[in-house]
Image (cartoon, rainbow, N blue to C red):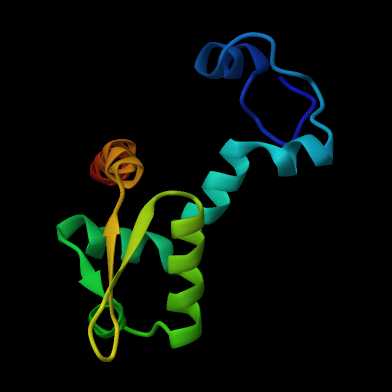
Length: 129
């Protein structure tokens, strides 16, 4: 067994994730890891709901707010900004009065749907077992 906080033997983790994994991961390395950052972002309460809505088609801000029940204006704005900064969502401003803003998945965001669908299938199949 490993000395860490898991009951999974070290050799199984190495087979699943690859060789050369360090025994101890410094906290700074963990926080700076892009995988850690992505999983934290996806683990946010609202991110997956917003991604599912945008997977259907582009949405305007108020339309998203109406469709994601319970989300505050502040949290929707924050979630969309984070997704935009990470290159997962694009924001298009239309020159109307008042200006219209539409959010859509970027190519990177559409690519993200593939592993998310695989994860969803894994969760559902685990519940059936």
